[in-house]
Length: 314
Image 1 (tube, rainbow, N blue to C red):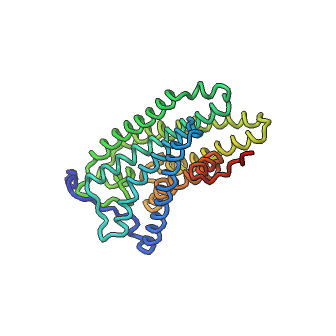
Image 2 (image 1 turned 90 degrees about the vertical axis):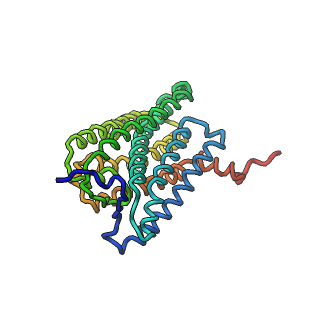
Image 3 (image 1 turned 60 degrees about the vertical axis):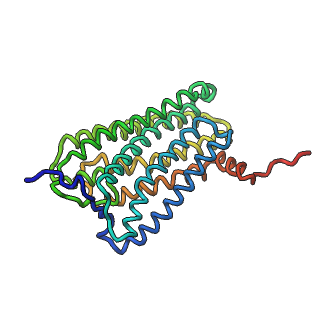
């Protein structure tokens, strides 16, 4: 059998939802709307967190990084997807596929770690309020964010290099709407136990370990909330922590389902719709969840737009 990659210098074909042509106009319209909301929502959070000095806190520093991650993540996937849905061809160059694959892995892994960092920040704010500014000082916050970016970069380099070395035997059709790892592995004509083991190990490191730390943090936070006697502070804690926990549930739930299961146990159609959820819908919901449940952000937007009603001077 010829196991030469062969297609390393030619275009790949992104099949997307071509087996369901009746759904493609609906999917493309929904994806376009969600992408616009993602751009506007996440850009708003970044600008508001930067422009409003009252939001120069660790929580909004991490939230700005999350919004930047979501902007980069969706932009690496959706424009190409819309071009293929609206255009006559469904091709993507080999170089474009490699870049899309790399950035999706890099940014996805970084977000896994960043959500765990944000949970620790909420733990420090709720359980150590008197020492919060000492614990979460700017230098530590910057180092934590840098560590998440470097961790994501390292995992992406490992998985990218291993996956792209798999022989494809001339296969060019990627059965997904972007160059994602499960689809590229299934395109290979050679089963690699090594990649499956490494993928599982990195899944534990980047999915299960951060999720476990988040759950532990919220278990401790829940105990602290029960002891809070101030109704106003109790409500504020629930709003900020509830927003983060909602994002965690949406992101980790779908990502674990896709990456921690054996790659041949998930049907391709099922995988596409799960991928659609955590690559497009979740990044759109993040700014909506944080802004709708967060009075600080809404007040900051009003201040910046000069809409807030200031008390009249006597």
